[in-house]
Amino acid sequence: MNLQGVIIKGYSGFYYVWDGTYQWECSLRGKYRVKKQKFLPGDRVYLTIIDEDKKKAVIEKVIPRKTELIRPAIANVEQVIIVMAYKDPEPDLWLLDRLLLMAQQRNVKPIICFNKADLLTAEQRKTLIDCYVKTGFPVIPTSTKREWGLETLREFLAESISVFAGPSGVGKSSLLNAIEKGVSLKTGEISTKLSRGKHTTRHVELIHLTGGGLLADTPGFSNVFLPEDLTRESLIKYYPDFWEYQDLCKYKRCLHRDEPDCAVRKATERGIIDMGRYERYLAILEEVIANERRY
Ligand SMILES: Nc1nc2c(ncn2[C@@H]2O[C@H](COP(=O)(O)OP(=O)(O)O)[C@@H](O)[C@H]2O)c(=O)[nH]1
Ligand SMILES: [Mg+2]
Ligand SMILES: [Zn+2]
Image (tube, rainbow, N blue to C red; front, top):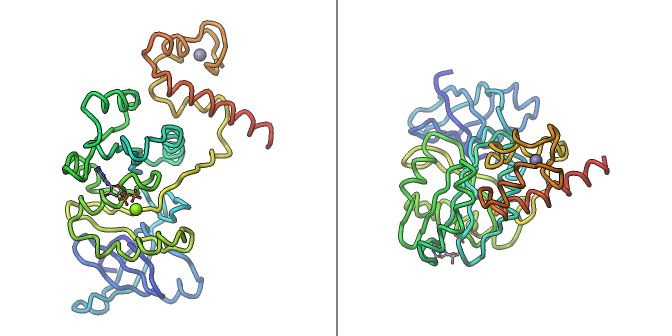
C-alpha cells in the first residue's frame, strides 16, 4: 500500500481514485472481488501502484465510511450545498427547511447558496435571506451570470466532499461550471442522462476541483421525506435560530405551538424569529406528530 485516495466514480468494473494530484484506474484486490463488496464514490481507499506511467493501481483497503447518503449514493459526504434561486424559480423555502433538517440529522454540514442574485435588487435579496442568516449556517449569494460569490463558494468547497442539492433550474450545474472552468466536458454525460429523467440509474461522479475539494452535481430533489426517527421533542434540535428562546419557555417540554408563555412564539411575534420559518416549523411539527402515530 503506497497511496491513499478517494473513489470518484465506479465505471464498468473499474474504480477511479483521486489521490489529490492524479487519477488512478483501479481494480479490486481479490478478497474484495470475492466478497462482491460495493464501493461508493467518496470511499477513502489505500492503493498499490501497478503501473506508474499508465496510472493503474489496485485497491487494497477501504477505510470505514463515516456517512452514507442514499440519493445520491455517496460515502463520506461532509457538506451539502443547498441551492435555491432568488427568482426563476421562486425559492422553495419548504424544501429548504426540510433539506436543512435532513442534512443536520445526517451529520452533514449545510451551506445555503442563493443563486441568480442578478435578478433582484440588493434590498429584495436581503429580505429573502435574512431569516437564514439567523440560523447561523453559511449563506452565500451567488450569480453565475455576474460571477458573484464564486470565490466564497470555492473556499467552502476546498478540502471537503460536498454535494449540491436543490430543485432543478436553480443553477446547480451552472455553478459547477462557473466554479470549475472547463468541467462541462466532464459533466456532459450527466446532463444528457438527466434530461431523460433517469435519476436512479445514473452513475454518480465526484469532480475534483482545482481549488481543492470534491463535488457531486445531483439531479435535485423536489420532495423530501422526513426522517422516520424524528420525534416532536427532537425537532427543535435542528432549528438553531430558535435555541436562544426555547430555554425561556414556561414548560420544559414546550413544543412552541400553543403552550402558554412560549418564548419562541413570543420572539416570533416580536419579529426576532422569522415568521415564515416558525410557520413552516409548525407544519413540520404536525407532520412529525402524524408520523409518530403511524409507527
Ligand atoms: N439570471 C441568472 N440565470 C442563471 C444563473 N445561473 C443559472 N442560470 C440559468 O438558470 C437555468 C438553469 O440552470 P442549471 O444550471 O441547468 O440549473 P440546475 O437544474 O439546478 O442544474 C439556465 O438557463 C441557466 O442559464 C444566474 O446566476 N443568473
Ligand atoms: Mg443540473
Ligand atoms: Zn415554547
